[in-house]
Amino acid sequence: MKALIPAAGHGTRFLPVTRVVPKEMLPVGSKPAIHLIVEEALAAGADEVVIVISSEKEIIRRYFDGDPTLAARIRWAFQTEQKGLGHAVLQGAPLLANETEPVLVLLGDALVSGEPPSAAMAAISRTHGGASVVGLEEVPLEKVSRYGIVRGELIEERVLKLDDLVEKPAPEAAPSRLAIAGRYLLDPAIFTLLATQTPGHGGEIQLTDAIRRLLADKPVYGYRYPGRRHDIGNPAGYLETLKAFA
Ligand code: UTP
Image (cartoon, rainbow, N blue to C red; front, side):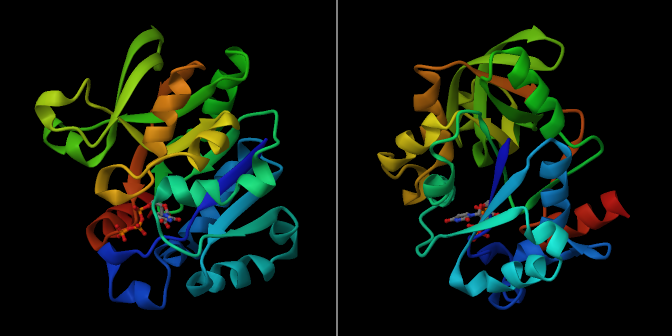
């Protein structure tokens, strides 16, 4: 399995520190957050991790290059314009679009405390013939408008077969309270879809919009993972993360 970590975003919610320190490099204990995410991907069975960065975030590459055992398993892709998460994932296409297995995508600013979801998602995908699986977390109704929200049928404990998803719905329009939460295992067809994806919410190329199109022709499952997702991309979320990982 191959993994991809988008880590090229501006990090505006964590200014001014992100002017020089990428949020993905903020320490959680003695390791930067992105190191823990790479470890999650490797533990789930990834043999190679593609990290998408920008020229302002070369420090991430310097960090991994300093550890030869990790560096051997990492490849680099660049996003020169920050056009959104879907666009960041698309920059991995030259390295990953010809894969036959689904690609594990882990957000560079999302950590999960408790059991990391990636390994379980890989197992669910295998059970369902190599299908795509997205990690899900239940969120309060007043927060659905911050996330991609899914609709689907529960087919076994914690596993749903999805039939629709909506990016950042108003509470009254939300099909559920289950939010796509930082981890995705995606059929490589996603790269072809992203290449023609038009900008969506916020004028950005949204990964959720491309997954919605994927769903029109291939099965996508959801895994309501037992761990808790932490967003290190803003000061309050970062403090919560440190408490959870203390
Ligand atoms: P976010 O939307 O949380 O990141 O993306 P952001 O755009 O950096 O945050 P703000 O809104 O400015 O504070 C989740 C992950 O996707 C990456 C980010 O680096 C983060 O790890 N990302 C986002 C990209 O690589 N490129 C983008 O254009 C957007």
